[in-house]
Image 1 (cartoon, rainbow, N blue to C red):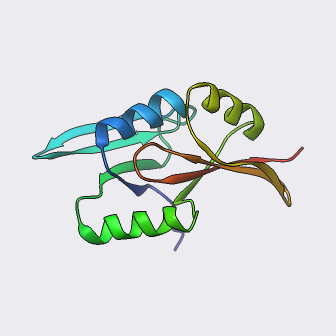
Image 2 (cartoon, helix red, strand yellow):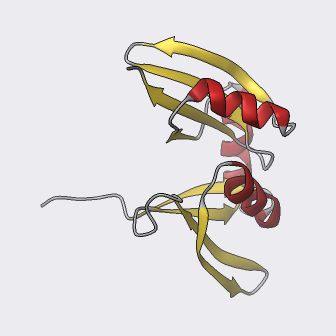
Image 3 (cartoon, rainbow, N blue to C red):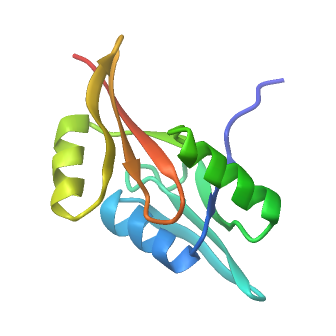
Amino acid sequence: MKARIELTSIFVDDQAKALDFYTNRLGFVVKDDVPTGEYRWLTVVSGDSHGGPELLLEPNAHPAAQAYQEALVADGIPCASFAVDDVHAACTELAADSVRIATQPMEAGPVVVAVVDDTCGNLIQLMSRQP
């Protein structure tokens, strides 16, 4: 058996706000946006790979999801990690767009990492490989 990542999810406190952040600031594109009653089945994919793995922007309506999300943020733990070409440039661009940079870019072995606030309840790690 060879498993692959097809879909993964991230809890968000506001799907519309999350959609804005992940598309307009991180460059993802909408894959699916289907009404499901009060919420939406809302997935995004990388702007470079429309057929790649999907990220479900999942409502944190369940108390356990809210507690999980709050605990990670309180401890400074990112809930997801995304690759970018240049972490320093990405943080400069995001900061200019009023996104809070929780942890400035730093070297971590073969990568440079930074942590940003996604505006909808999460810390997100950005990483790029060192040349």
